[in-house]
Length: 618
Image 1 (spheres, rainbow, N blue to C red):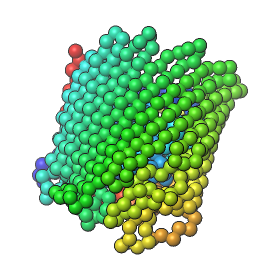
Image 2 (image 1 turned 90 degrees about the vertical axis):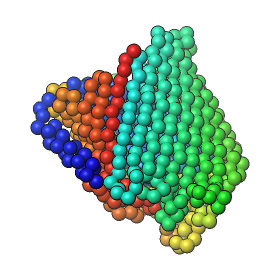
Image 3 (image 1 turned 135 degrees about the vertical axis):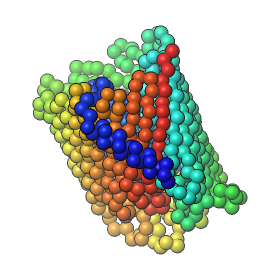
Image 4 (image 1 turned 180 degrees about the horizontal axis):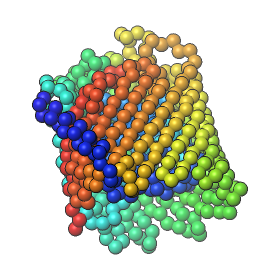
C-alpha cells in the first residue's frame, strides 16, 4: 500500500513540475503529419483532408504518449467509439461505432480484414503490440461499399510501421493494481527488430504480457509474434505479413453471470497475408491472398473441463484483386473478392460459407476541385443467404481552403454469425432462423482545418431493420437472439483538436463529444444483451505537454450508456524520452472509479504501470 501511495505522490509531483516548465520537447508537429496522411482504403486511397467521410486518426505520437497498452485501450479515447472490455489490457474486448455492436464493426490490419465466422468477440484478437503501430484510421459510418458486408457501422484499420533503419528495441513494463487482497503483479516484455536492406525491409515483433489479475480468476497471459516484410521485385513491392497470438485468461463472469466465477478461455489466432503491387497501362493493381485461423477453447469450470467445454476452430481464406486508375474525371477503382469461411465446433457443428464480391467506384473532381463526388457499389453473392447490392455515395464541397462541407449515404448488411444461429448451452440458445441485418445510413458534416486547428461536426442517422440482439423475458430464462425489428439511430458528433507547434510548452489538446439517440420498434422483452445498451453521451478529452525530454499526458472519458451507470475515468502518463530510451510511469483510473463497460464485469480500480524501452541502432 505504501509503495502504491508513493508512486502516486511522485507522479503528481512530476506533473506539478512540468506545469511550471516553459519549453516543448523537440518533436515534429503531428497535425501536419495527419493532414498529409493518405487514408488506406482498399481501392481508392484519398488524403485525409480531401476525404468526404468522418475519419479519425490516432497518430504515432499520440500512441507513444498514452498509457494504453493495447489497441482496445487506444480506441477508448476516440469520440464515437464504444469499447467494452471484459478484464484489462484488451484480453477480451468488443468495439462498436456510433451505437453499433461489436458484430457490426470491421477491424483490419494493413487493409487485411480480421473476420471470424464464429463470433465478433474474436475481432480484436490482433497479433501486434502497440510499439509497431504507425497509426490507426477509424472510418465512422457505412463502410460496406468500401470493405464489404462486415463494415456495417464502420471500420478500424491498424497500420503498422515501415522500418527506416536497422534498429532493435527492448521494452519492460511492470505494474500493480489497487487491490490488497491478491498478488496482482503485471509484467510485459517486448522486442522489436527492424532490418533494412537496399531492396527490402523487415519488422519482427515479439511480446509477452502476464498478470495475476485484479480479482479472483482474472489472470491472463498474452503472447504475440508478428512479422512483416516488403521486398522490391522488378521495382514493385511484394508485401508479406505473418502473425500469431496466444491468449489464456480467467474469465470471471465474462459470459454467463457474475455468479459464475470459474470460467476460463484459451484463444490462438494465426494470420498470413501476401500482396504485390504493380502497374499496367496506368492501372495500379494489387492482388492479395489472406488466411486467418482462430481456435477458441472455452471451459465453464477452469479446473474441471469435463463439466462443460466448447472448442471452435474457424478458417477464413480471402483472395482479392484491387485496382485503380487516374482518369480525366478523377479516379476509378474496382476489384473482385472471393471469401471462403469454415467452422468446426463441438457446439456449432461443421459450417461453411462462400462469398463472391465485385465492386466499382469513381471519384469525380468537379468545379476546379471544389466539388468531389464518389459514387460506388458492391455486389456480394452468398452461398447461404440472398445476394445483396451495397450502393453508396460521398459528396464534398470545399467552401474555402480551410472549410469543407460533406455528406454521404450508404446501404449496409450483416449476416448473422454461427454463434447467433447455432450456439446452445444452459444459458443461451441460438436461432437458426435469424435474418440478416440491414441499414441505410446518412451523414452530413463540416470540417475546418487551419494551422494545427481542426474541427469536425457531423450529424448522422442509421435506419436499421431486422437488427439482431440476444434477449430474454425473465432473468431465469436462456438468452436467445432475435431480429428485434427496426432501430433508428440518430446522433451528433463534435471533435476539435489543436496542435501548438514546436516552440510552445503545450503539444496538443483534443476534445470530442458524441450524442446518440436510438428509437426502436416495440419489442416485448425484459432484458437485452447488446443492441439496446448503446452510448447516449460520450465525452473524451486528452492533452500532452513537455519540457525538453520530459512529457506528460492526460486522458479523460465520461460515458453515459443506455442501461448502465455513468462513469468517468482519468488516466495519465509521465515519461522521459531520448532517441535511445524511454522511461515512463502511468496511472490508469486515477480516481479509482468502480464501473462496468458491460452488464457483467466490474472493471478494476486504480492501477500503476512503469517501464523502460531501449533502442539500439546497428
